[in-house]
Amino acid sequence: MAVPKILLFYAFTPLADPEAIRLWQRELCEANGLRGRILLSTDGINGTVGGDLDGVKRYLRRTKEYAPFRDLDVKWSEGTGLDENGLSTDFPKLSVKVREEIVSFGAPDELRVTAEGVVDGGKRLSPEELNALAAERDDLVLFDGRNAFEAEIGRFAGAVVPDVATTRDFVDVLDSGAYDHLKDKPVVTYCTGGVRCEVLSSLMVARGFSEVYQLDGGIVRYGERFGDDGLWNGSLYVFDKRMSVDFSDHTAVIGRCVVCEAATKDMRNCDDLSCREQLVVCGRHDRVTCDAHAVA
Image (cartoon, rainbow, N blue to C red):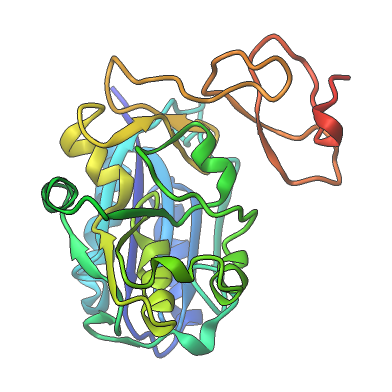
C-alpha cells in the first residue's frame, strides 16, 4: 500500500555548478514521482518534496550519494495523500530552481559558506540543550525567525516575534535597532526546520549580538522530541497544502480567527487575488480579505 511522505531538507555547502545540479535534481524527482519545491544556489540546497514512501527513500538515497549532500539535514513527516497517479496531493507541481539565495534574506553578500556550513552562525542547540538553557538562564530570549503570520498559530512560550511579512524584512528590522536591547542577552533563533536560522543567526552575530544560538533542526525536530510537552505551544505552519501540522493529540489551539476571534489553527490565503497574505480564519467564513479582514 502506497504511503504518502514529505521530506524537508537543506544543506549549506559550496556548489560550483548549481544549474547542473538543478537538472539532475529535477530528473531524480521525476523518476521517483515526487512533487515539491527545491531551491539551489552556489551556497547549497533547500527543499521540500513529497510522494510515495518508496520513491522518497530512493530520492534521498541518491541525493546523499553526492558528496556535498552527504550530511543533508533531513526531517520526515506524514503526507495527506496521493492522487490516482501516485503523486503527492500536498504539492501542486514540481519546481526546481536556481536562485541567488536558498533562503531569501536579500543579503547574499553577507553569507559565507564553506564545506563545513555557514561561517559565524549561532551555536547549535539540540532540543534537550534548549530546555536546559531555558531552565538555567532566566534572561534567555527565544527569537522567532519566521514570518509573523506563522507564529499566530504556534510559537515558543514567551518568544519575541518580529513584525515581518517576508524573510527579506529581517535585515531592515535588525538594522533599525529595534532589537539592540537584546544584544547582551542569550538569544536563541528558531524557525520551521532550521534553514532560515542558519542565515538569521549569522546576520545577528555580524550586527553585534553577543550570545547567539540556533535551534538545530528547528521546530520540527523539537516537536519530534518533546511534542507538546515542552516549550512549544500550538500548531506548526507549513508551506504546502497541509497548512499546519500538530505534534501530539493534545496540541493547544492558540490561533484566533481574524473575523470572529474563534479559536482555530486554520490558515487561508487572502481571497483578494492581488494579495499574498495568509490569514487565520475559522471554518465559519467562506471568503475573507485583508481589507479590515472583511467577510465577503
